[in-house]
Length: 267
Image 1 (cartoon, rainbow, N blue to C red):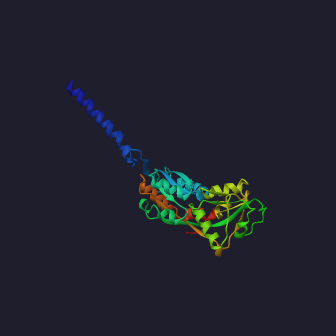
Image 2: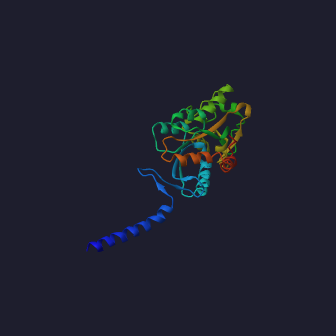
Image 3: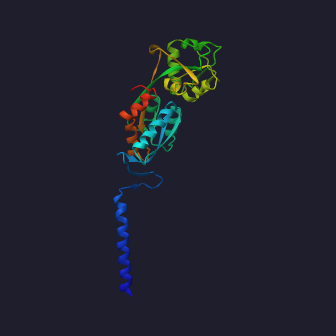
């Protein structure tokens, strides 16, 4: 009887070992406790489910960039959370679960330097005056925004686009009384698109995203401000290697072409 039981145990052990061999050969590993599954990606970068906090002005281009990255790195999934940079910084300080941060100014990124890896500038941008389609109020330059009959909307002062707007208006000694101050630059664009405002200061790429709804009036370089977009992996990320790989990819020729095609300037 004991010999039969021993024989059965030996057979079971052999069968279990045989089943484990192909699983081990897959090379995958999992970090439990809420972490995403991390495996070796076909594209060479670690695979994971990443959450990227990104400035609102990156909404359209990052959707394209994320799709391109996922195609190159099967198994990786990227979820973007878009908002004003000041809101993103607040989320990081509050410990929101995220893996990387991309802001529309260096000051916002510097305010959370204790929480990030070393950031890299991935793109630049500039402001334009967005007007309702056809520019019916004939807005030609910054000084036209001072017209009290014109409904002008700006980003709030704490928002990067709002800071840049204030900087260029102050430099030209132009006083604008906005009908509203919005929490991010996309909200400014939306107000103009919907006809709730006659004009607003937005990034060039924002105006380009709605060519059939708004017109863009260029601002001369000497009167303009250049926005810089730093990107960094977050130290709180549970997928540090994968987050760092995505941030590094944003400076690659492939990602830079996507950004250039969307109207962003070189870093």
